Amino acid sequence: MKMRLLMMFWTLLTATAGFAQAQLPDFTELAEKQGPAVVNVSTTQVMKSNRFGPGLPFDEDDPAFEFFHRFMPRQIPGMPREFKNQSLGSGFIISSDGHILTNAHVVDGADEVQVKLTDKREFKAKVIGTDKRTDVALIKIEASGLPVVRLGDPAHLRVGEWVVAIGSPFGFDNSVTAGIVSAKGRSLPQENFVPFIQTDVAINPGNSGGPLFNMKGEVVGINSQIYSRSGGYMGVSFAIPIDVAMEVQSQLRSGGKVSRGRIGVAIQEVTRELADSFGLAKPQGALVASVEKGTPADKAGIEAGDVILKFDGKTVIQSNDLPRMVGATRPGSRAVVQVWRKGATKDLTVTVAEMPDDKGDAPLRHGGKSPDKGVPNKLGLVLSEPTAEQRRQLGVDHGVVVEDVRNGAARTDLRPGDVILALINKGAQTDVKSIEQFNSLLAKFDKTSTATLLVRRGDSQTFITIRGMSEK
Image (cartoon, rainbow, N blue to C red; front, side, top):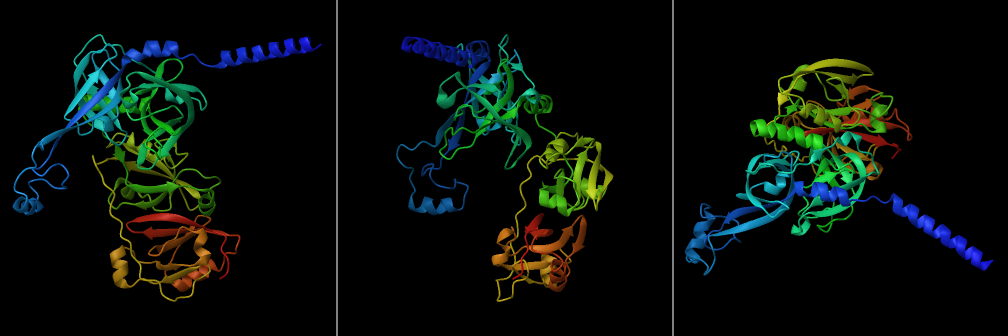
């Protein structure tokens, strides 16, 4: 009996092991076939030092240099006037005549770019163009008959499916790592034009610019970033979808730069509370927080408080969809924008402008007087009415200033210095003219209600939802 039970257990154990083995993917054929099209990219940047060494924060053209020249007239013995900064990355061949895709940050600022193939041949590469907004670069080596990758469609990727990365982590050429797709369409801070593919594939310094393959051996992305607190892999990696990268390289190849559209709006996500405030049936679209004067959006009649539901016939599901749609639109073309305004949809026609090559963020002005001993209102806010000079400086003609944030406002994102411009409820927007009027509007809400405020913060506007207002 015992022997029979042991035999049954053994049969079950081997069957389970065989099943598990059958389910695990085999990456050997993919690595053998696709590996030769993956390259090592090494860059050299020549750094010039002044005669006192590379550690000083200025060069010989800086007035501060004269001070050090007087007291340290000689160059440090043995200190070179130039030194080289070297870095490593990866790339992959997309045409047999030597066009290669990699990351912009891999070749940014490089004086020399070297490409090494798996057959040990090395070539000096020319940078055709880079696009920092998507972190895509196109480089070229003089060669022919090179192996090329096959391109896939990221739209067909499914969360949970296996993917493979090949690259040069820490300089170890043609290293293969595998994992699964963790999420799609990820938005990262300051990265509005790329719907990143998130994976748990091991990506480390040196993998940047390398390909991400699906199990068919097709490139579906370019490995670009990792989320890390240590500088190394921690299980969260991000890849640029290959369709985005190929559109960028097409423009780089033809003109050396990427042209993008813009309409001149600042937007934010539509939360459930904001959707309720604006009378939307569900959270969707992109909420317009502010409109730049003189821009296409301003000329088309788009207003702060509008929710953009469609752009050029395409539905805006989340706010981060809009920058990608607008950016992909050819400057000078006309597009119909469907907005939600005061409980109804409205179609507006906008002529898309071209985005400047390098637009920095405008500096924010932080204002507001020092908190006084005022009595907090129903929201726990101590308010003041701006003087004529303050209104002129802020560029507003109405509103109240948040002087202090007390207990009751702990559930809000309001800060001292914010200017409350309007209150929105069920799509109806009321401009705030005085403290008395604002408090009167709040009196109509009970502690279970929510309200949405249009707030000026520095040089920008945003919508802030107040939840659960209680008496103070």
